[in-house]
Length: 86
Image 1 (spheres, helix red, strand yellow):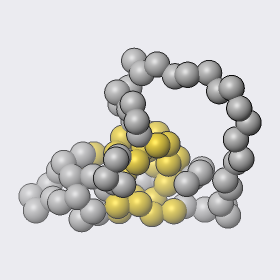
Image 2 (cartoon, rainbow, N blue to C red; image 1 turned 90 degrees about the vertical axis):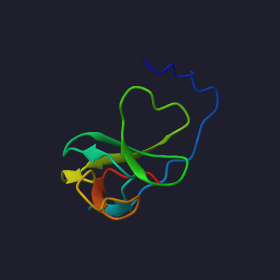
Image 3 (cartoon, helix red, strand yellow; image 1 turned 180 degrees about the horizontal axis):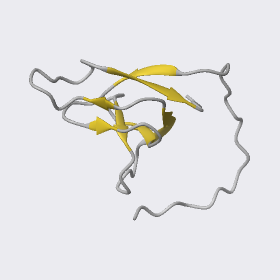
Image 4 (cartoon, rainbow, N blue to C red; image 1 turned 180 degrees about the vertical axis):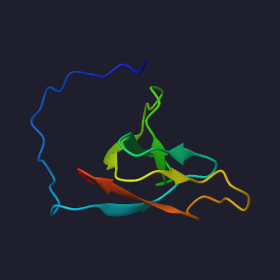
């Protein structure tokens, strides 16, 4: 499981209007509705899996997206995410 450092400084909170925001999905992943969604270093949405060091939390998946089907590619599908901070 990933280790998290204790925050020692206050940080501003970014807030979006209520509703879902779409993000491009990483190649060869399935993100299930209700799961935490992270942004990879390349900027693609990927499911949080406990090894998310260096990734940025985007929010919670509002739908299930399977980007493992034939013809899959990074950014080939988008996922709606709620509770977004980015």
